[in-house]
Amino acid sequence: MDQYIEQLGNRYPVLKENKKEIVSAYELLVESYEKGGKLLIAGNGGSAADADHIVGELMKGFVLPRRVSEELKTRLCESDTTMGTDLAEKLQGALPAIALSNHNSLNTAFLNDVDGTMCFAQQVLGYGKKEDILLAISTSGNSRNVLYAAVTAKAIGMKVIALTGSEGGRLRTTADVTIAVGAKETYQAQELHLPVYHCLCLMLEEYFFG
Image (cartoon, rainbow, N blue to C red; front, top):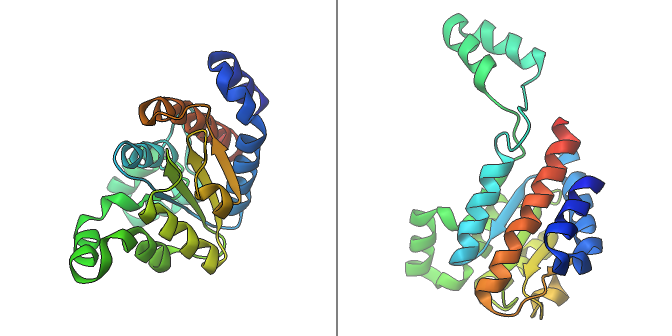
């Protein structure tokens, strides 16, 4: 873990100020995954793309191969000798994560029938369990649909991690941990969000698959 935090600070000195919050977010994620939880991610625009990116790093190998267990390999081969062998060789360990912006039919139906600003909140209600975590990404910290999701998550008993710009917005008061990177402009904050979540994904992969 320490090596990734050190590398992050060396490559992006402005993020050294966020070390404590990054470590706290990592610890919450480890605790959640150890309890069988999952990560729900909410964000708009570029932050929706970041949500998708994070899912890609967690749900398959990032920098490590993540071989599945020998027990699962055996069960796959018992299930089907041909396909099971192929699956046992190629499947990779996953840390469950869902980007809430990807469910277009549900989100547009809720937008049309109820209230579009609550699309993420509706998914948190449907997917969320106490052991889960919501990662709320908003450069302003004030995106209403992300805030609705965060409030819903807290009501369920979930932990909330916020990834924001320097001011933090209303998310700062709602989240359990807020990583407010040192930039106010949207594009500049987004440029700093990527190395932060890459660092988190690297640390999680090392912990669970290293």
